Every structure is written in structure tokens, then in C-alpha cells.
Image (cartoon, rainbow, N blue to C red; front, side, top):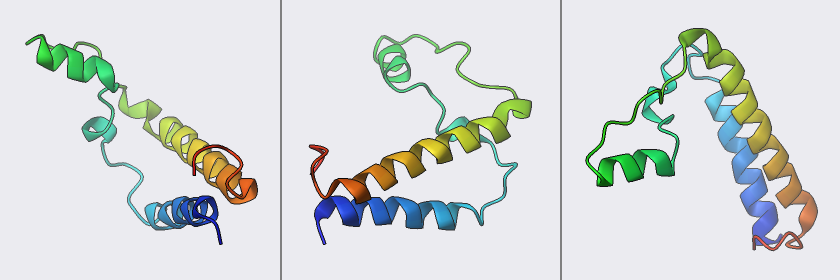
Length: 85
């Protein structure tokens, strides 16, 4: 089994475990918009408008899950050809 296959399987396993978590918990701890948060912090600025409304949480969760599934399946199918491993 290639590293890509293992990584893809790990992603799908993580999603199976994630399904058991409550769906109404706040994504605020992870939704800081990547580099924008780091740059704002390094410059001593407050990051504004980084959060999403609670009504959007379920859709964002599903979108993130869909992206992880797609990437994990791509890794499993790639046999290492994707350049990731």
C-alpha cells in the first residue's frame, strides 16, 4: 500500500469519527481564514469579519467534509501519482 493510499484512508477514517461529533459546535476555533489571521496577528491588528453566522455552520461543515472526501479518494486512487507522496 502506498503512502498516498494510507493518507487517503486516514482522511476517510477521520471523517467517520468526525460524524460522531455534535453538529452544532462552533467552528470559530478553526475558521480564522488562514494567513489573514496570522498576518493580522503579526501586525498587531484585529482580524475583522472572520466569523460566519451560526446558520451557515451546517453548510460549511458539509463543504469541508466534501473537500476532504474528494482529496482522500483522489489520494487512494492516485497510487502516488498525484505528486503529494
